[in-house]
Image 1: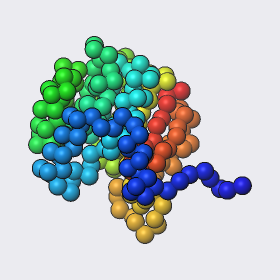
Image 2: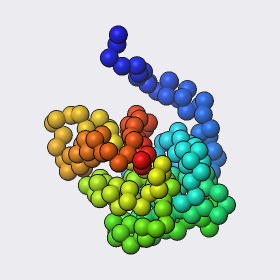
Image 3: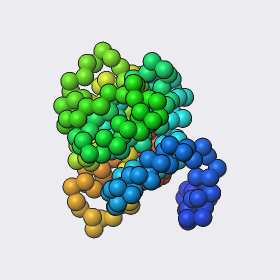
Length: 220
């Protein structure tokens, strides 16, 4: 039998995948276009359309009411998750940059979900440590500075309800996680986190090759 069942995507097949999901939201397209136009190469930090759709599906499927995001950028992922929350749902977004999140605020207003979102501009670890432990998180997304991923994960996990989900982005790091020639701090931090999560008995886990790699952790 073959070692695994998978398929490599070229551009045509990837376009087919995206076209056959609900990945063509006009507002999100407008946001992605503005982000690319204004920020250029750095716009690559924005999540892929199919990833946003997938995250929204997961949040809705578990009935999430309280979500936390570490690393907001221009607000694309926050829109995907906040839309999946009920009308009285809450989302806390953590970031440190006013320039990028100013774009996010505008699009949250356009999307009609601004009232669900609280944005904290401060080091995320400080924001997380200040959160009460008796207000459980249903859904979390970690997509910020890689060297602090483990710290963010631990603070979020202790506040996540049983069967709540923690999603971690960029876990494949453009393939660098398996390239021994790459020894930068971010790469090593991701490798170490990946190895740790694979043996963490507090969670059920799957790593998926969506966009730049997405790990989904379910708290036991």
